[in-house]
Image (cartoon, rainbow, N blue to C red):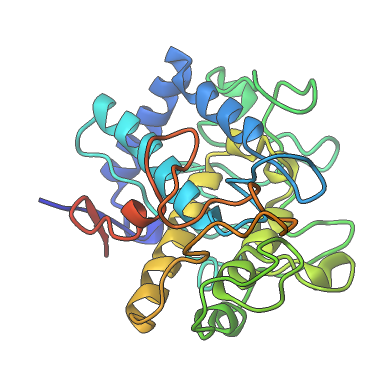
Length: 288
């Protein structure tokens, strides 16, 4: 029977505590850092050689769907009552709203060094030392809203801009494509600076600190953010039932993207699964 993923704002005090405790237990065991390393390893950009699976590619959504599910399964091995909550950043938009409460993810970083000093994931609490990262920093950092150059979280209308596109993705299947639901949701826009960051990307920028770059998994908000994106893919699928994951087939040998993207029925590293098999997980979980 499918279990339920809830909006973080609706979690009870007990549900918050059990979710946090399960995360801390995975961290204590060393399992959590394996997820951080995996995301770093699969963060391949357009300008790099080789296969892209996690970002700037059609498989952005199925890759993260499986990634979140793997973490959720690990949490449920610790506590079977836990499911992955999601953060609706179109509604909870301030630095003091959910999930930035002391009993969930803690608050903003302090002004001097952006170190998070409140909540269960603060370095001072002794349970969340950064061990896998792209810098030598040991503590979790945030810069909610970007104090030096403020930006806003994406709005409902900006999210609708992505959801209304009936085509899943389009050539050239990377960060430069201007059509298709996937890139409009992932958020690689035209122009430079804050105007080019949309939806998924803008949220990472808004949170700042550890949420910037391949090691963004070090901030637990990563999971709540991507659960919400997974919900948006589900909504898009329901609204555009005649459309599916693209490309259906691998781009031809003469195409610059040949061998660089995952087609619908091809295996998605590092798991032995296809995007096709990840299009419907309603038998495992549903969203409240």
